[in-house]
Amino acid sequence: MREAGLQGVSPRRPRSFTRRDPAADLAPDLVQRDFTANAPNRLWVADISLVPTGEGPWWLATIRDAFSRRIVGWHTSERADADLVLTALEYALHGRPVEPGKLIHHSDHGCQYTSIKLTTRLLKAGIEASMGTVGDSFDNALAENFWSVLKTECVRRTTFATRTDADLALFVYIDGWYNTRRIQKRLGWLSPDEYEAKHYADQATAEPVAIEPPTPALTS
Image (tube, rainbow, N blue to C red; front, side, top):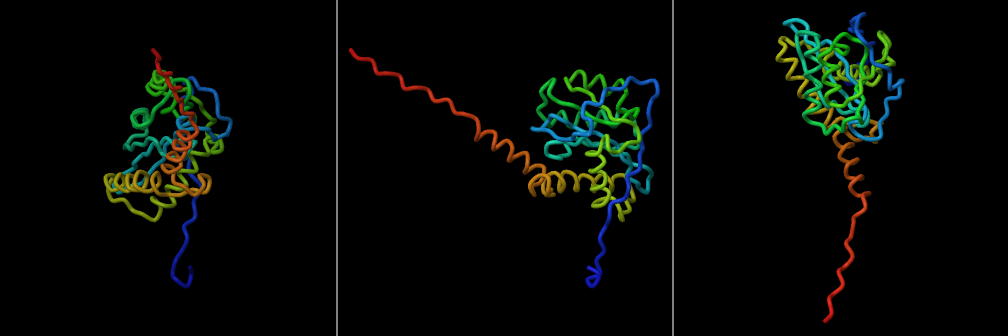
């Protein structure tokens, strides 16, 4: 790499942007650092991060499925508020079949995630809220892992003149590359979309086919 004039990019330690509301009711930690799921839409992890632009801060909220590592919902805003995370959730709910009582939404104690707006929407959708502690990246490690990948491959060493430029780059990376084509070792060297497609194909193959017995012919 040195002879070719190439230099690797190493991930940096992520910064915490969590701001807790001391008066908020907190959900229990239903995950306990076990970020595994046996099917899609069983465990979603959510978080917020900052993308710098020439027009000022641009906040990104994402929701990641623990089964396939797919980003199932994301949204950007100049404000890191409850509307940001709520819109990301609506994005995810619009595109994913969610069974009430079967899905956990895990986040940190940030005031956006303890807001009445979000907790009410989760309750209405039949989704169980789960929360790790503040300032502990291990309690939301699957979300933190995506920030490391995104910042290393898309954001670092890039200057976004405008928020529109940042949005376009995020769209190309998340929907055009990460979900569809970026292979991962934990997924058997498949992309998130390919991994989910394989899961559903295997599931369809394994389902028994009911064969109706032939109706006996009537004799006179």
